[in-house]
Image (cartoon, rainbow, N blue to C red):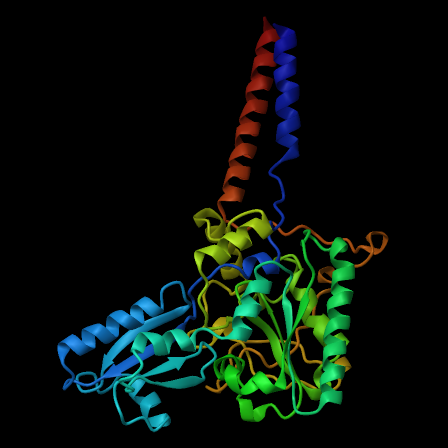
Amino acid sequence: MRRLHLILLTAGLAVGFAGPPAWACRYNVLEVGFIDLEIEPYRLFGCVTSQMAPESVSTLRGEIETALVETNVRFELVDVDRDSDHAALAYLAQHGIEELPAAVLVSPDGQSLPIALSDPSVSPGQVISATLVSNARLEILSKVAECYGIILVIEGPDETANALARDAAQAAADQVTAQMEFMPKPIAKGPQVVTLEFESVASEKVLLWSLGAEPADINEPHAAILYGRGRWIGPLFRGEQITKENLERVLFVIGADCECGLDHRWLQGTMLPARWGAERQATVAKTLGFDPESPMVKMEMLSIVRRGMGGAAVPGIPFGYREIEVSDQPADATEIIGEAPEAAEATPHEAVPKIPESAVPVRQSEMPSVPIDVVEPSSPLPVVAWALGLVSVGVVAAGIIVVLAAKRR
């Protein structure tokens, strides 16, 4: 009997002194990028007048809502006569829209895109569907669902400059691929390069608009990095800014641990306006080995993002981005800092991030010592850990009492 008491005491001490475990982040930036927190979606305002027949308004609403199924666009129907103070009217005035019905697509980054709906030969649903689909976006979404991320190279009119941009993009992709084995979590397939040829630029107006550009602006090569659920991370690089070093600096963020010290505003970049269906989500689940849309997984990822945001998003400006100029010199790329700007035109894609040393993979022999980040009480994991610790203390106390009682006898 005494031997049993001693065994219980030893076991209790072993568990008790072990204490609650330190929980490292289970996810990397890439994985967090596959969830849609709906914090700052695209907004589509459908504008009608009171003179329109109720049947026509109902049909328009139904077609648009159907076209927006499985997209990251939230729809609102606005009667401009009854709601004369609605924000949508300012967009109508901005774009000089007088003929209704019409629609305006508004990006989380602030820019807006007018969409005509008055052509009787094309239904509103067809117009909206065409706005959300393009060849380049289909290729981008197909690739990001299966790999580390993509570098989108948008060609300009000069082929020599285009070749330099493509070479820099491929060199950066190859370098990151070579380093993936040293990253916090394994990733099956390295970054890919997608090229939008100059001849196709005019047909990708919506894609360029979502990146803050227009077809007329493409007089030199541009490059953007996308990952996860079609999220744009970093700035829109232009001309001489498209270097292997600048692209690497952003790419390495994607493979980093989501709690390695990175600015958490980089965990949820602006998504492309597009349809993300169940089939594509199934591909992602197969690639990652788990479904990021699972309620439990999503709740945990949301906790991570909220902690990094200080608890909440900044209204109108995702994650408190601040407008900062990008230097033409790679060595002088600016660090993202601070709080939300006062200027309304500020966008979240104006700087290259400064990456903590712990986020950049190096050979195992050179790996820095990175402290494990303990999950805060917003996650259920530490509650379980501390509960186990308290139980362990109770077992130790009970064991001591039993041993002392046995000695007295």
